[in-house]
Length: 287
Image (cartoon, rainbow, N blue to C red; front, side, top):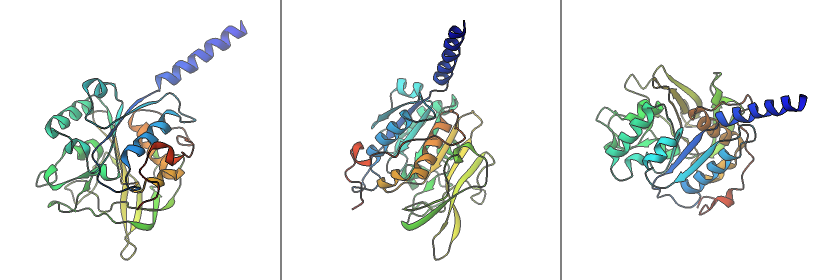
């Protein structure tokens, strides 16, 4: 009788884990950076490996593609993650169709994540006042230099200090303040109200920059949308080798799992420090 009860309890645990499993679709857009910088396809493979091997949040699945997703892929995704030189839906063929597809995904509550330059929109992508669906889907974006409504900036800092916000958001679990050589974009765009984030947007991390005239810049944020979907934007990492930083990697993985509707453990999601060379980068060190 006892053994039967134990088996039943184990079955409930396993079923519970499967219920919390999520499907992550990682979309890699065009990239024109040199070896060691961005490395979006290697970064995507690394993320897939980490997502599928989380030590304390098992059962998640990830798929990496380098083209616009099929209808089947769109329908299966609990969250969609973008890497590439500016927001990939605007760089692939037929941006209007791509944005319409995303609109349908967002309406059903799908999450969205953009990493580093994939948070970026060009002048031609937005209206003269900066309107673009990404602002609502993700809560903010990097306004590419040359934009008329707002200009963000991109600059590499040898010692960028990334500070978690003073809030109890689940994405902040399991990582602490860290210092990193990277290109955390500044003056990111959050909307026409004096660039203040909307009320459903949470700033997750900031950095005091530039050193000569420091201001507290938002470098990661998230949104809980009215459609029940979630968005997460983070303007790092520029250098591929920074995926080896455990705090940064935990931060990003937390954001991905959270946007997919997964539960974030108290310790944050835990992944082993990956062997960076095993995911096929052109280089681990930047040229």
